[in-house]
Length: 308
Image 1 (cartoon, rainbow, N blue to C red):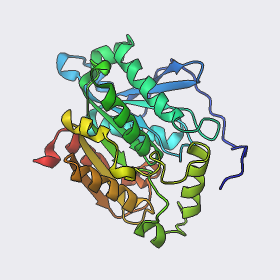
Image 2: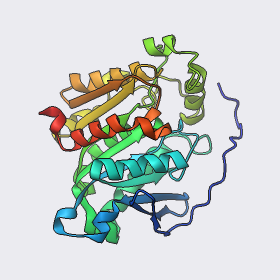
Image 3: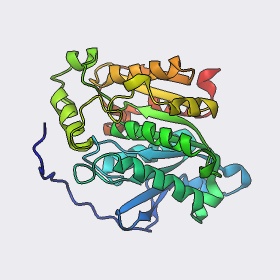
Image 4: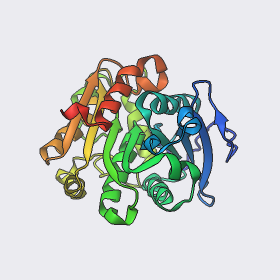
């Protein structure tokens, strides 16, 4: 267990809110405040050609993206996360809204889930030019990498219960990219890769110790989605026709936990797509040269081609 009150050292990154940036790949992004008291904010991305040639046909599917880092590290403006989101915009053909949420241990779960819901209600109510002109709010997906995949899943459960309260925002599915799940019982991939040089088992455990509510073990629902047979809100997601894409890599200690979650959702009747390949945890975020097949899978999923 991590020692109580342990200070986490993180780099300080400047965040010039409301500064629109033109990126070398042609995409545009801007940062907007979410909750000043919580110091949360959002980074919006659109393809530049949509800005230059707006039309009614330019409405884009929306991916609300949650970054990884074990709920402890990184931000929406971390360089490799920013590059990954730009790739989603250009390769998948979407608008991306990336949330900078509160981190543990200063803000333990469910703080990040609450921030995610703040972001969804912000999208519902805010009067923003990019959202009104370019976002197809009837075609939204919650997407996250690693801890962000965990966040997308739990935000989805809460959003499903909110139902019509979120309209005109309509969520059509979840994209869980190498989701950060675990439990007190070790999975086969955790045992096999417990000394993984990139994400060893002790790191998985320690980040959950730092982010779960005080006193919670690793069979808490925030860590283990299989507890008590899964959330009752899964039935709500199913009733609204949501689909789920779960991705993983064979050399990722978290692979089996993600696969078990996908199998559980499938067993409950959710339309579930699995995309597993060779590689290591979150490789497409850390190495842009590996991201092509993932972007293709996400594009197929959003446009329903993977189920045809």
